[in-house]
Image 1 (cartoon, one colour):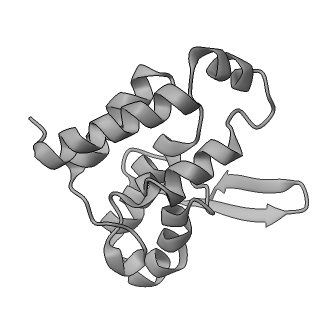
Image 2 (cartoon, one colour; image 1 turned 60 degrees about the vertical axis):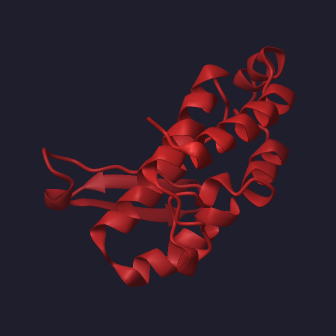
Length: 147
């Protein structure tokens, strides 16, 4: 069960999402190319610090516990929040922290915490450590391949 800090955060996030992620807004955003509201994304990062919850302070985050991050996921799920929060914060930031590569963490986590960087996690095979995926950023966007 989440502690007092997590429950306090729940109220803040719930109030924010009630104002900024209404059912009407979610339905409208689902029809757009971007699929999310950049202003809401930026506000959640800058004013609430949600993007940096699971990121250590040395990388621009707050170093909160998984309980706080879980509360944010619960509240975002309850309103069907449109934004790349799961992929960016839940998957990519968590993976960067788990692999223990401080150079990669320093390069990417501050941008995730600030809301400036979008990310996701992808691998091929049964285990991420065995993946042979490669990626390249070209003029048409990213290309990912196995090999």
